[in-house]
Length: 91
Image 1 (tube, one colour):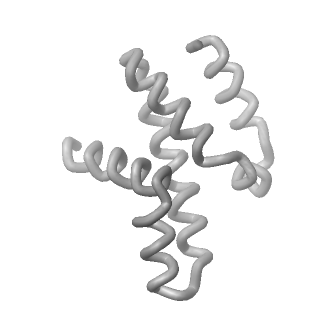
Image 2 (cartoon, rainbow, N blue to C red; image 1 turned 90 degrees about the vertical axis):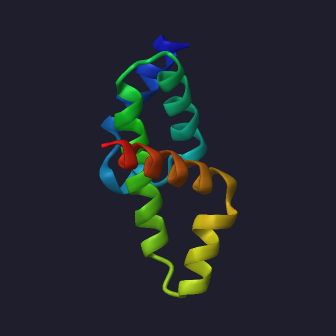
Image 3 (cartoon, helix red, strand yellow; image 1 turned 120 degrees about the vertical axis):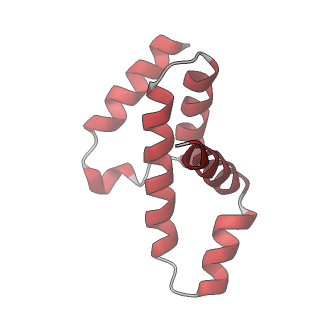
């Protein structure tokens, strides 16, 4: 599983920046969880990337209520935000 994730992560990083947003947040969330469970520090980098992508998408929503719902009612968005916030609280 780790080897497949390594291939995924290398391929994802090779995408041009503007195309990375097309990669599903679920994929990044799944990759983070596998690396995190294995105690692999690359999980931290993937979580940070997922959070930046999530925030970038949220910033494109001009309506504050819709932005809040996007961040709080979509399960993967909730999970990424909670995991990121927990990590930030530790640092």
